[in-house]
Length: 491
Image (cartoon, rainbow, N blue to C red):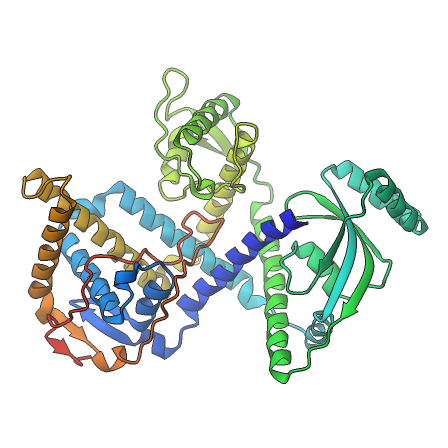
């Protein structure tokens, strides 16, 4: 059960962070769109300032409010400088990442439009769920991986329901120990477990299942006991009611989304070319093993080399929906959509299985992205604004690396002189600030209203190609000096 809870916790975290993302992009108040600073045609809104400060890790010397703003302004300046050089915007890695991030946002928006916004809750359903949310169950449970066994048990219980007690006694005798688990409404158990216990009242002795879990296993449960823990405080009651409504909304949205996915993928069977799959999966497994990569949820294989004479880019890799995908097609899509593995525990025994599933998930996202383009979600104003933030962040990073590498190539600084590199970089940034000082406008009054926490928090969305909710904080200059700005309170 703990393993199931861990699995569902990751799913819940992903879902919650999708909602956070949607809230950031489509449910903003006017205060979030207040412009704190303008650097030429680029803007830093209150929302961007808070997101870049609170949803990613900032080193201690960058936690001050003025220092934070200083670095975000510097990032915009560097992006402006980078835009003067076409080679940055033509860089295939940069283009691929930006395309992938945009399409991930489009899929999130598609979820919102096709599932989340279409949910309507029934007041009686909310009241029933609220009452049951105060209940804690004690369960005897058994999990199994064999689907045939689960089906035989289900058929047997349906035909002879009175033998359920005897079956559980027999299982306890065979296994030598009765597994017992307590379940509360707030627990992150598998959604099918949660629904079976908290959707309608369940009596003592009730046998539930076998139910198919999200991870493909099956669970058989018996209700040994339950206890109600009434909520007394009015504030606690309101908080619980809100929690119940949100949970019901999310569960219904998830079901709508699963139905949407099933309809979209109906009839689309993915079939691999055996030779290509063997060669590529072997190469991928060896590459993964040699690198010792820990982040198996985002392990990109877009650099697959031609493996002569066994395989090349023109060879077939798989077919789906009557379309042939070559090895080259696969490499091309990986530039914008890294493979996402369903497990972090990859080894030689299971790698091919999860490699294949990662490709299946990638193709599911491919069709979702096509549906999003058909709805013109790439033109959504909120997505455009978010993409400008990501673009500026990447351009600034490219520009900084280019400036330092150029100075090293020219002999101005040396690669092994860290102090010299830092001194050179700080001088360069100060020159840029003086250069752009006249074109920067700062809304000091609004900026003074903003407060920042000092708590480190990293908004991470497991299970997607680009898990960071916002670009990394631009640690460019450890200074709070904003005196180079000549147009304060000019917005």
